[in-house]
Image (cartoon, rainbow, N blue to C red; front, side, top):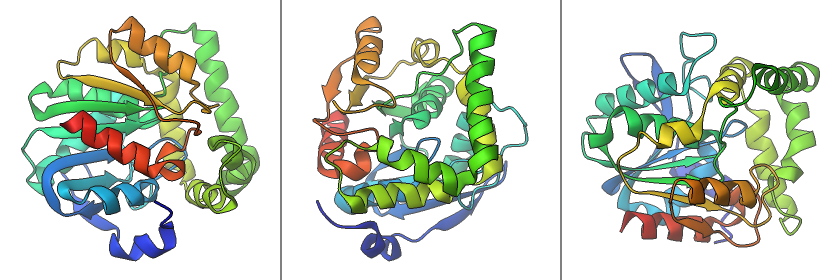
Length: 274
């Protein structure tokens, strides 16, 4: 499980897919059942390279760059909702000709997109797995939502993607993470496009994960690392308990669990999909 991204990236190159709403960049491992992986706000498709390596064959693994990330075109709305991201996801699946029910995995901000997608087209999602889910601030007061939005956009404007990566990458992992893992998370964050990050920040400030999950029909599992300081396990566990969902600990790892604990993440995906 120590395989590093530089050796895996050429095996799973980025592809472009023209959809009805715009181009989506993605990485793919060929296989059987469709498995779709959605990254978080400061990340991208490369964060899932180990899952592409470990789960390909048993699954057709598809990891996108969300709209406005990587090679993916931004959404048309300046302040998109989780439903806008979900609509682009289904346009992507249609363009790929993938009509089978998905195993859908969302990490952090990707959990909001995944839940919105499952709520929008329930017949197309077999199983939902939310890893270190961002819950959004849609139920908070307007002042709280505005403050969260303002703080993130201020950091982006002040430091830029590279500066944010330098400041935030260590906090994305546990204290036991290796320098290589920290560097990898930072490198992915440094490649974030400001326009895409800004759109995603608006979505995060106004989305409500619990409300979306109340509309989901398929089985849902919540997982989180015990050392996650971004979406702490107490909050993730409370979400699961409130909605009567199974909660799984990923062990003593931080927020960037797919990088720090790829084996645990891949096993949980397999178990959830069984």
